[in-house]
Picture (cartoon, helix red, strand yellow):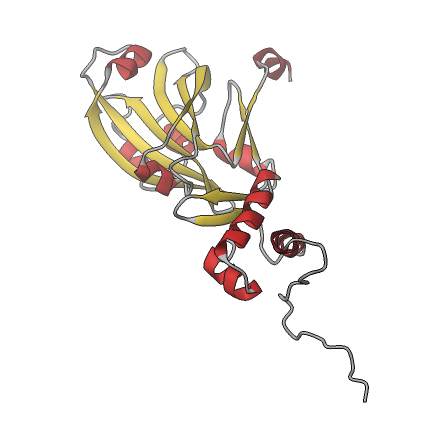
Length: 258
């Protein structure tokens, strides 16, 4: 009696002994699952242990498959957190009028702001110099997290001149928008005076806030904003999740002519 061809009911079964390495087959299966939308951008893939059990291979084989996907930019591997499908990168233009919510909405994404803390602190030398204050003078420090489609993209530490913006703390109880809070304090518009960009390694706390690996660098932006009269109002340190944000430098002259 001739038996029908054997079919394996397990969809994760690998073709063994057919000339295609097991890790490559696992990588192809994951790539196809990502393409089908089974693992959307930003989502965490199953653990190495789960994938090993699913495919009946050791973790070294799975690790090689994941590393191959990471090298191609399809996923990112975060030490201690797992493997994640690469998100679409957010373009973040820096120009004279940088407004977080406007920039995110312009890319058909949903912006969100969270005020993490508001406190009065003495101005450190760099802050005092930018705001034209004596070192040690009190400033209002506001920590704010900016998100796009629920994913953290930037953690900002704003420093506002006191006593001019003493009412800002109360305004931020009603809105997480710095722009709206400043408008409530009598500054309906402001412009970026200068920006400095460098790279930095995140602290454990910042890495957790941005939901990224501590071994992954962040982009650090120092910026000064001034009111229409040219008076400094806000010195900001912003740290961008480098894997989710692409900084775009706008031409100030072009913006003025628009």
